Image (tube, rainbow, N blue to C red; front, side, top):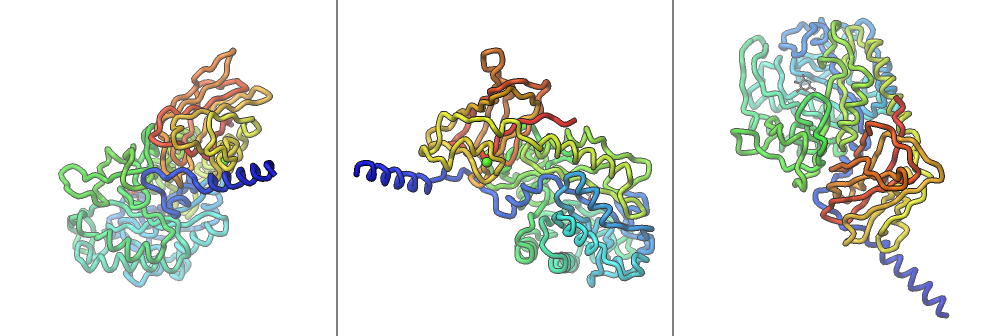
Length: 487
Ligand code: FUL
Ligand code: CA
């Protein structure tokens, strides 16, 4: 009888505990942002008449007939991206030159006026289809600045721009991103006017109503990128990295001389690090061209696989994403050099993170929330992002020891918070048991979606300790791993 009652009590207790996960902390990611975080590495592809003019910014006056790839092949581009570990492609459907890569009804300056597929082509469709066929997500970039359009600078142009978005949002399936550049206007062709047009980008584009009435309604799963959000912020540079301490949260601040924080006006000093305890969950995207420019230029070379791996650690490894610029050449394919570099980089990431060397270790934590196995420290090692080690509310700086039967050799450490409950940890450290004592081998800050650290020298040990050293609330960590760089 007593046994039965105790059993019953235990059962009731564990059910009660099971129902009390840690209270979320601060701003939280929306489901579309959680999906975006999983993407980690993706590409942004620039291929317009500007490619054929060998420029970076088309003036808007190129004859549509210049857009004449000799052998466009979306599958070739997507395969190379996939081999690079890219999980999505954002296609620049219209760049600043205004040329639309789909048969839009909003302007004559579009692909049907080019020789591409005899004027019957739709490049947005071809890339979207190729991406989906190979399991990559698809997104679009439609430049608000349009150097071709005669109406640019007037309210009428905003209607045209929104109609372009509507076409892109309704004809090409589910999009994972809607990418909005902050370019500010300036000189251009503008239907033959060939003049300078300046717009006030605190008011002209009316992003609030565009994103509310078009993007959110027609593509609710698309993360909106702009320099200050709404869903994903610009890293503040085009080098492919954020600060060593970078928060997924941001309280957008006005840039110098402005009193409101609006897209196109990023306070770039704030962007690489975010705001600790910021008002919104707006993680960073590190966009960087694979080559020097965003468009293909014969005299430029792609970055090395080593450089890309370094950028991966400084973006994905700091809770952000890496967005690599892909620039097809005038054939309409990625150059062999780019294909090779992507493959080597992709293999390095894949091979490095293939096996968590402590996955089979035993874990001993100082505290597990409510003694409940749901929150066990074993969850750190199961490779599942949805299970996590959590502590009781008053255990804000806990530690866990992982012990192995054999020593391992590693030089990469990776940590992931269970971000559905917010970005909680502020500082942490990792120790290894070396020569009969604990030696601190890494000390880090901001974790969030992921924190990856590469150590200067490989460590050999059979016992590791993870210590959270600063956190305003109890912790929720979903993964802890160590790896050997597959260089
Ligand atoms: C920038 C643009 O001005 C570049 O041309 C490129 O499209 C890049 C991705 O965003 O702001
Ligand atoms: Ca887990």
